[in-house]
Length: 152
Ligand SMILES: Cc1cc2nc3c(=O)[nH]c(=O)nc-3n(C[C@H](O)[C@H](O)[C@H](O)COP(=O)(O)O)c2cc1C
Image 1 (cartoon, rainbow, N blue to C red):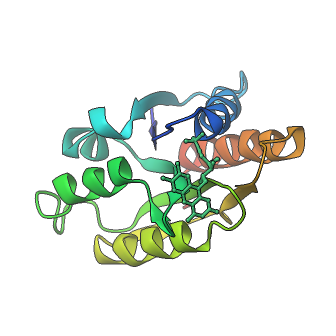
Image 2 (cartoon, protein in one colour):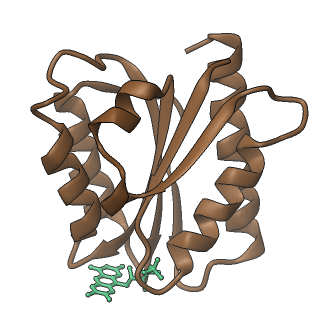
């Protein structure tokens, strides 16, 4: 069975809500993919080696990804050099009013691995609403279905 990893950090729960919706979508009953949800601080290189695709979620903090997500990249980048080239990925972000700094900081690092972005990022600004949660669910479903069928 193909495998999908979801890695996220959330300090106050908004990104966590989004992660829950991504997980729901990825676990759609018609899609047979093994899904693993991990906190960024508990995820490592083994998780990235295990999966066929990854979805990354972070709040925007000080115009950047969260420290925990940055730490995840710091811990995995060199051990995985040349080992996960082209791994499909997507991003979801919870921000107070922006999100562009978190997005560009992830894009820049992901280019180094390099990972292959296969879906538009989902960015929530302010309170996470039902529309955003539906987008997150769709994101999870899209990645899981794409990984299952091998289209990426
Ligand atoms: C220390 C800190 C820094 C933040 N910096 C930004 C920022 O630069 N841009 C922004 O849009 N929101 C910023 N925010 C707001 C958070 O991104 C927003 O509240 C987000 O929904 C938090 O997600 P969480 O509940 O998953 O922790 C910041 C919040 C904190 C606590």
